[in-house]
Amino acid sequence: MTEHESGIRRISEFLSGVAGRVILIALMTLVVFVAVRFSFNFGHSVFYQTPAEAPPGTDVEVTIEKGASIDELAEQLYDDGIITNDLAFRIQGRLYKVNFYPGTYTLNTSMTVKEILEAIDMTEAEYEESKAAAQAADEGSDGEIGGGSEGE
Image (cartoon, rainbow, N blue to C red; front, side):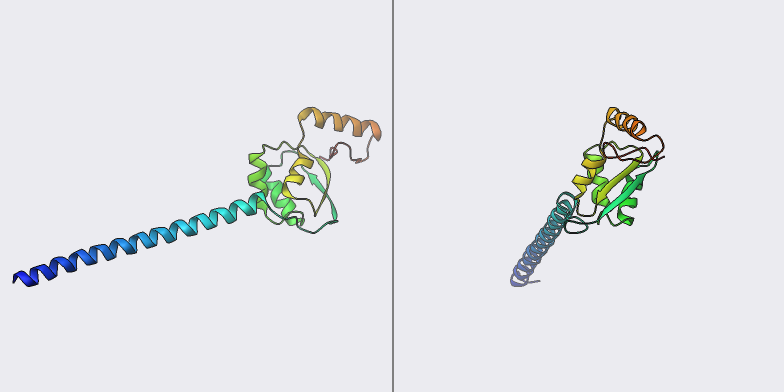
């Protein structure tokens, strides 16, 4: 091999190495861009979700059974057409540490996920108070007091 051929070979290897690095950097940049875009869209869909219907919406009575989980409630609300994204409801319910109790709640299809969570979130004392008030108001009816009534 001559000195000229050896020089050309070194230049060729250098250029192919540089080209490989440029391609690798371009691919990594594309992957990061796609990941950032996906993350933004996912976060936006979770925390800035639009209601299922425009106001005034439709009132829907939802009965939460005793022992229901946030996942079961999300599925029920999705099936009833109250929410459009059950994953957003599950994530927000866990992040906000929502406490809900059995009962019948009147929710509206124009409510956001956050508004729904606020409507069903209550402390144990609030639940006991609403249960006692419902029993006092009408001993055997399903009156709605404090956002919900016992409906086991």
